[in-house]
Amino acid sequence: MSAESPAPRPTGWEPELAELELRTRLVQQMGGPEGVARQHSNGKLTVRERLDLLADAGTLREFMSLMGSASYVDGELRSLTPKASVDAFCQVEGRKIVVAGGDFTVRGGSGGGGHGGLGMELSASRRALEWRVPYVRLLDAAGGSVRSFEEIGRTYLPDGNSFTLPDVRLLRAVPVVSAVLGSVAGLPAVNACVAHFNVMVKGTSQLFPGGPPVVKAALGYDVTKEELGGSEMHTTVSGVVDNLAETEQEAIAMVRRFLSYLPSSVWEMAPRAQTGDDPARREERLLRIKSKDPRRAYDARQLVECIVDRGSFFEIAPRYGRARTTGLARLNGYPVGVMANNPMFGAATDVAAGEKVARMIQLCDTFHIPVIDFADEPGFMVGIESEKKGIERAGARLVITTCDSQMPWATVVVGQLYGVAGQCHHRPTGMFQRYAWPSANWGSMHVEGGAFAAYRREIESAPDPEAKQREIEKRLKDLASPFRTAEATGQDIIDPRETRRLLCEFVEEAQPILRSQLGPTAVPYRP
Amino acid sequence: MEVRSVVQGRVVDIVAAIGTSVEAGDDLVIVESMKMEVPIQAPQDGSVTEVRVGIGDAVEEGTVLVVLG
Image (cartoon, rainbow over all chains, first blue to last red; front, side, top):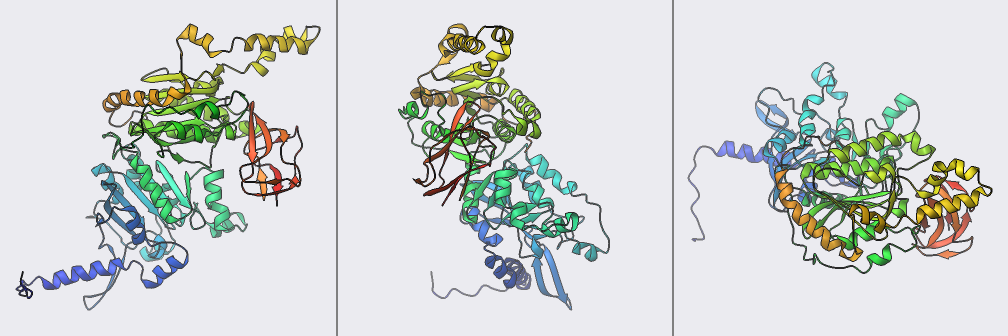
């Protein structure tokens, strides 16, 4: 090619192309250098820096990007401030998604700035719904502002559901993820939970319907943003946010990782990955993790990590409802949902753990991935605290969610399996397989405690009631060997070291069933 | 730092007495909950400066069990 290529001949369109270039450059500046500097000094990335972390390199395709507030002098463009979000298609590990990234540098990420009407282009959430691709919110917004009253010269009815409706419909169609990356209030705070997974960043992100000034005005006390809606509150006490990230980089890496286990929509199969882990791998360690002493607690996460493909376990909500460990993982490359009672945190399903597990079952049912359940269930949590929180209603929800689900489900009974919570590790319909380790023991209730209730008169009228109770308990315990149940019901008892191989086979066998179940489920996902 | 119970239950053993040096992950107190013995472990290295519970005490999730200095 010649070094001096001739200048292209003018076409007459040069001014329009220059204006397009100018407007594109102006919106790239977000809220301007001061706003960007403030964002950085607050320890936060700008929306464009976040998008660079989320999207595969070179795949970002913005839409509605020229929308904003412009000013003109004599018909000439003087300034253009973009709307307070960057909306785009991009790819994550080679698959298309839609992302809506709040821009705090523009009016604190608050709505307004572009007053749409007839002719308005399709919103980001509507596109995700119609294109059937995952939807990611990067939330950094303060919600509605009374400033908009002055701009439009009136107040308005809070009819936000008109534009939240697609977000609701998305939950039964495509994976939806919210990353909370700043102080998020109002509708965006609620949208944080209209999702299948959410994550927040330690120290720089908070979530509340109304922040400290609103609390002060309504209730008269002072509270900091962090105390009110920081990560300690939401990832351990309220459970409103699943995962905690130390940095924004880690939060966005979690978003990418969560999506990697799920299909693009409920009409597609979840993607298999090559993990290189032998499906027949036998783990001797399992015989030590589960001690011969049935009272000795173990960490269920160790057990799960031994069995699933190496390095594939992604834990969800690790700091909340810890009696149940939940997450996504792979078996022979196929995505699975995992839940396990965790004796390190008491193992008994309480209200928090029950809600967490119900969400995991619904996630798997919605996106057609098998559930793998490691049961060591002492029963629903008893006691006054548990009653105050409403354990029966949480139990009812878990029973209903279990029975209503359809995806293939395998339970491995590792230790205890008692009561109605124990019953929630079994589904009487569909492709359901249960294996039990020789360490398993079960019943409608525990022998201790149960013996006194059932044999009260016999015990109380004995010359030595304590000895009588011990005698009855021994009699009952002698019946508790799982092999006695296997004789009668055919329950499969397995060598724990065979667990991985059997589960990998189960997940392989589940694939045609999952394919036949593609599409929306009868019961919609409830976050 | 205050080390709290992760479960509600009853204290059945105090493994680390006042003055004991512990490493992260060492058992401090054993709480029995729903017939499981749950070890409450040191989140970091330190020495036990206070033990706030006795064997047989009923504790809630979040009750401070020991203080590490």
